[in-house]
Image 1 (cartoon, rainbow, N blue to C red):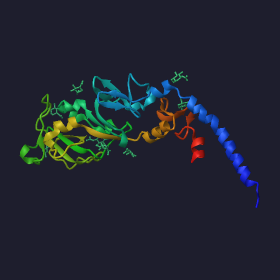
Image 2 (tube, protein in one colour; image 1 turned 90 degrees about the vertical axis):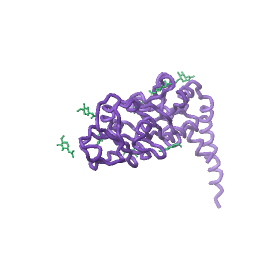
Image 3 (tube, rainbow, N blue to C red; image 1 turned 90 degrees about the horizontal axis):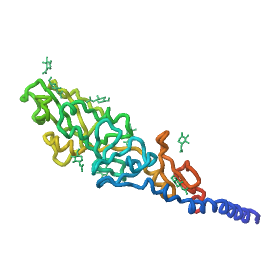
Image 4 (cartoon, rainbow, N blue to C red; image 1 turned 120 degrees about the vertical axis):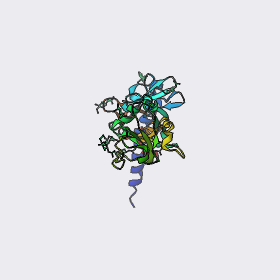
Length: 266
Ligand SMILES: *[C@@H]1O[C@H](CO)[C@@H](O)[C@H](O)[C@H]1NC(C)=O
Ligand SMILES: *[C@@H]1O[C@H](CO)[C@@H](O)[C@H](O)[C@H]1NC(C)=O
Ligand SMILES: *[C@@H]1O[C@H](CO)[C@@H](O)[C@H](O)[C@H]1NC(C)=O
Ligand SMILES: *[C@@H]1O[C@H](CO)[C@@H](O)[C@H](O)[C@H]1NC(C)=O
Ligand SMILES: *[C@@H]1O[C@H](CO)[C@@H](O)[C@H](O)[C@H]1NC(C)=O
Ligand SMILES: *[C@@H]1O[C@H](CO)[C@@H](O)[C@H](O)[C@H]1NC(C)=O
Ligand SMILES: *[C@@H]1O[C@H](CO)[C@@H](O)[C@H](O)[C@H]1NC(C)=O
Ligand SMILES: *[C@@H]1O[C@H](CO)[C@@H](O)[C@H](O)[C@H]1NC(C)=O
């Protein structure tokens, strides 16, 4: 029996505790209310805007990622840095998705509808078009007569008469860059994702476009939650657009503040 190891371990534990104590007290003293509050979620109409989103004019840029900047016109939230105007209908923080409506396309402008390509427009953003969406096809200026076309193609009317002999068709689940070769009739073809609703058909295209489509993102919401639950502040480094966890004693590489204490109490 060797009596030495037990006291040695006890001393070592005590030493670790004592080393950890100053960290603990500095967390309590270090809470800077200004710093912790300035990224608090803000309201735009019925929407709550928080990480990874941030509200222009209310939040500083380090509250969220570049592509998630939201502009709030009275009661209307939209993504600020997109080519088209995407009105945000709803944000689902629990599953990292949000519902947007393309405002320009809702107006019934067939020229705009024929140019729209969601996968190329969103190709450079951190947003993915959810496979929960359906595909709404548009077929403009078809040369074949109505009788030669599938009956499921519903006629489309253009706000400014930019096309004649034009149709729309609601297909199945959204697939990125779905092949259009099977569509015959010599038409100018475009496709847009729509979330859809129970019993929707191509003829409901106006309501479908207004209803919008679901986008998914991969921002590190889980890491941000870990960080703030351990007393830190989620901040985005505006230089590289990456999430950082700011603790009272500096940036934590593991998105948790006061890690020494967490390990000891476990
Ligand atoms: C709190 O944080 C804000 C914003 O970062 C900073 O301007 C202010 O100087 C800080 N106050 C203290 C007491 O550290
Ligand atoms: C929001 O935008 C839509 C579409 O542009 C518009 O019809 C609506 O009036 C706007 N709502 C408010 C409160 O401004
Ligand atoms: C996220 O949740 C909302 C509401 O609970 C749901 O409508 C939406 O389809 C979900 N998104 C994904 C990508 O599953
Ligand atoms: C949309 O753009 C993608 C990528 O640029 C391309 O592969 C696809 O064929 C385009 N879709 C249509 C309908 O033009
Ligand atoms: C349909 O054809 C007309 C006449 O050639 C053209 O001006 C218009 O841009 C076309 N519309 C679409 C949506 O391609
Ligand atoms: C498609 O358009 C071309 C040129 O406009 C025409 O020659 C051809 O007959 C059309 N094809 C069909 C299947 O309508
Ligand atoms: C988005 O798409 C990319 C590339 O196709 C994929 O790696 C990533 O997992 C997707 N993210 C989501 C949230 O679906
Ligand atoms: C942001 O990231 C850059 C490059 O990784 C780094 O040099 C800089 O210190 C970071 N800024 C802050 C405020 O953390």
